[in-house]
Image (cartoon, rainbow, N blue to C red):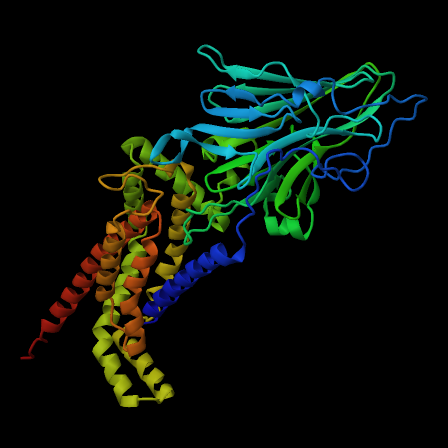
Length: 572
């Protein structure tokens, strides 16, 4: 019976957890303000008088090199008059389409051509980056200098080499160039390199100092976004949207929007990266290896826009010299095998939470099964069978304990009737009964506790893996990441849960019995709104558990019956 109480506690805790998530989603944070603003890049300057945009990093001021003459500067750029009317630069490869604004070279839109916005509309690719609210999400970069050299930030106007780029047959990369210069002789060339089949974009910012004096420069890259607003998102499934960063010492850390509002991030890291992640997708700036950069966060526009970025240390470029800053931007789906190849720890952006150490090998096995069967639904079923088989012995111990406790149910009820409210005598009678029958009432607890982390990890694998997004199964289940449209699978799950209860010893307490009877109905309602891939896993696990428990219970009952029918030998 203690085993049943454990199951009840876990079940109720799970239900309360789902209710809490639903409350947070519905009432915890208000939906973002929908703005009609058409230019999210410029027009706002910092209050410190530096002339930098308000959403630029608060990097330490750079001291101008000590010389007799410093160049006067204008950050507007030589071609500012023509750029105000210029449209975005459009870049299309085999896997993405990007729009780059001449203002700062900001990537203001990015579409993933192999992923659809909606499963039933294959002609509409998923848009990850977007320059308007709701769901504003842009990738910015720029340069910061001394108070007088006016280097171009993400708010400065550039001249593009051309307006359209398309990767053609036989080409493996596209090079997009944007130019900036001022009257004093400073020049900046910003280059983006897009490669075939990759979501990784290489950025370089080359500074050419044709002035008569050295200049101090630092570069920065940042991601700016608003809170995610999705009116179609399930209230029963919560996934993380916000900032994250990684370093060899700090490891993977989340920097939520609430954290950014409370206090700005300011940490120096070498060989790390910063990112904004959401369900299935992410964008990350990856600085060059072995270079220390400062990671920072910032909140602007009255607390509605959140920024995470990185800026470099200062570099002095002599008169007549030049210097190039390098960085990389990943913007795409959270494909674990690709992320691991790009930067250390980047695969951790697939947010499995505290069970990552278990979830990663589970996903590897799931992916390996899919490579053989070619269907994610069958892969989920086979994986569940394999995990159930791996825990067969532990489950057998638990089910044997339940079967033995089931045999004692009438005698336990008789003891309750005999001793009534005398708890001390009742517990003493229970212990004598368990000792006499050689039954450990807690014998089924440990096997269940050992299995719980594995099944929770599998839950997160099915929830977080972009490989399963919009994946079909069979018949009416054409999208494993959406709820069953006809509620057939949740009903099967509810019936399986009810049958499983009937195989367990009934609780002697009437209140517990009523709660147990209600649980299948409660879980059926909750699972009606869950992605069908998760319901498929849970239903398969229930059916396997019923089969195993029925078989083991039957063996225990047969053994008890045979033992009872044996009569002692008569003495001569």
